[in-house]
Length: 205
Image (cartoon, rainbow, N blue to C red; front, side):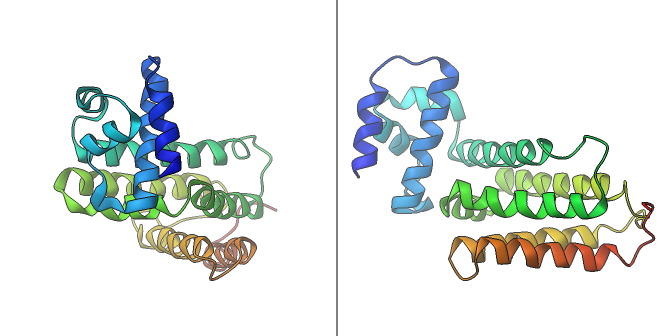
């Protein structure tokens, strides 16, 4: 609870809207980490952050909106991590595989186990379930876009990419739980990507 007290003390200051939103998201992550997703309500977030309930409702609207905001922030961090390396025009298929595997695992580890619980909670309502589906569709589109630069991919079959995502989720969570090392998770995921993609004709020399 010490971290909650520190957040509440800092929250009594008036903050710009963007900083307040970030502070509320950090508070929500702490609640999930310490108490689980069942304790995550806008009222509890406001209390722990030291602000009034209307402020939390103004930022997120509903509990579902808060979960979506948490996971959107998480997803954006992953995109930024990948974008820092990819897109320069001189990558190989092996480079793209290594970046995609490492970015997923490292981002899960960096955000902490509470994000796994937040993502699991997205299936609770139609609104959040729709958002979770949109995230998965975004990953499929990104896998197709990035890997399609190097191999001839099937046009209308996304099952392979959904398999990639499932493997990434499982290995990242195993690394977060300490069942495998981060390096082992990245290496295994890279082998899964490579072993599957090598079935297709590689365009690079």
